[in-house]
Image (tube, rainbow, N blue to C red; front, side):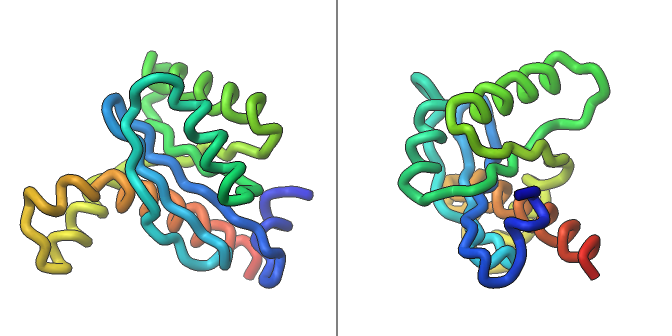
Length: 146
């Protein structure tokens, strides 16, 4: 079953979007294959991959969408690719690398538009960035199927 098969209406698949940061990891989910929803923020301490794998098991995730910076050949990009591969090996689930460009900017604008104060919004920005990453992936897949 490929990634596009996971997005068919009624497939029952849960997708998990990840905004992986140095201190915090934003999480978003989609059970519909249409809409990404902010889920949570976890601290990036200890074994982050193990935490993500356990969350994936608990949510019965079929596919992980891992946000990655697209700076060709950068050390950060290599690190993210290695993390995503480790998650794939640990979970035996498909892990899609997806461009995270402007996801935090988009999340910040969304939170500001909702009327939340900056300090209050800052604690949730990572999960909203994860939702922007996952939504971008879902929108791309929907466009490809049309």
